[in-house]
Amino acid sequence: MENSRWTNWGGNQSFQPDGMVKPATEEEAIERVCASIKAGKRVRVAGGGHSFTPIVETSGSLFDFSNLSGVISTHPNSHRAVVWGGSRIAALGEPLWDAGLSLANQGDIDVQSIAGAVATGTKGSGVGFGSLSSALTSLRVIDGRGDIVDIDETKPELLRAAQVSIGLLGPVLRVGLKLVPAYGLKEENVILPMKEVLRQWDYFLTEYRHFSFWWMPAARSAYMYKLGDVPADSCFVKLLREVPASMAEVPVGKPNRRMDRAYRIYPDGTTIAEFHELEYMVAAKDAREVVEMMRGLMLKNFPNEVSPLQVRWQKADQGYLSAQNGRDSTSISVSGEIGRDYLPFLRAVDRALQPFDARPHWGKLHFLNAQRVRALYPDFEKFQAVRRQMDPTSLFLNAHLEKLFA
Picture (tube, rainbow, N blue to C red):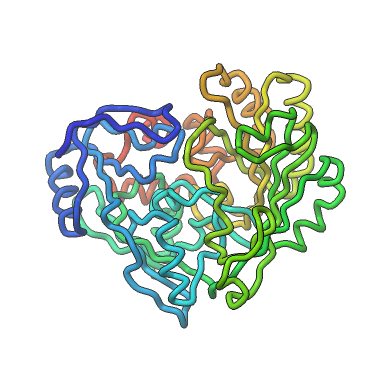
């Protein structure tokens, strides 16, 4: 067990656990986690370190499951697979493709662990597609008693709690996913004035598999996300059209006009955090109103903030702690520049979005308290019942999560 300091990719979360453990096998992971539980130590797992919130922090044992990586089994006829929880999303694309399968959707970054992405509700964009969590069919976890628990569709209450659990049900060893037949994507990305994006809004939503955009309040906004030259009050619009797998075997085209396997097109190549991000989800029916409200807030009240406004869509799901629980959703995200006092800006965004019952991405900055969490999630008590069942002595909580769930 190593005694070293852990820091996330954004550099805004850092702590010294009691010890860090990187098991080489599933058997060792079970043995070491169970030893910590037997000793009464708190337990957390670090995935790819891509969360800006202190959800990894622990005064007890911190586990790194990155050695448990890769595809365990594929089932092409039912479009399913089981993968190791420590697998980076980027490591799954090729072996799934070789089995004739693909993730139905992905986000802009693919270096998170699959278990961490599921636990926090990570997603891409597309009105017909849910988050990565919504594709969950099974989990193998170690519960707070040290027992191995296999959660699947025969246990719907457990599965819905597990879909977005922030690690509160126990360390994840294996992840089962519902997939789709392998497919390719063709980029048709464009730069458009905001008024043109608003005019073509409905067309983009129905015509493309993936539609999302970044609105730039200032001319230098695009550089925060390495999006090139985009004029103020204009948008970088990401438009992805599905093509058959047979057309995507050989990559073609230049950036923003590429055609390739889906798992190669989704990521934008971001590897270094130059910002700290806040992301909330609102009901899709409110998206236009919210975008216009955010545009006015940023231009009038925070003219010195250059953060782009990113807008994406997701389909409703049934995860108890999912931001998309029971409603088709639109995600609204802004970022603070590292090295600047961005909290007044982000707190103002939080206040502005509260009337829309905005729910956070659990890995992004937010300002929720226990009262707000309870009010925002209709199935909060159902989740709490499962959490207490799986972790009766609260070994999987930390100081941050205690304030929300204890």
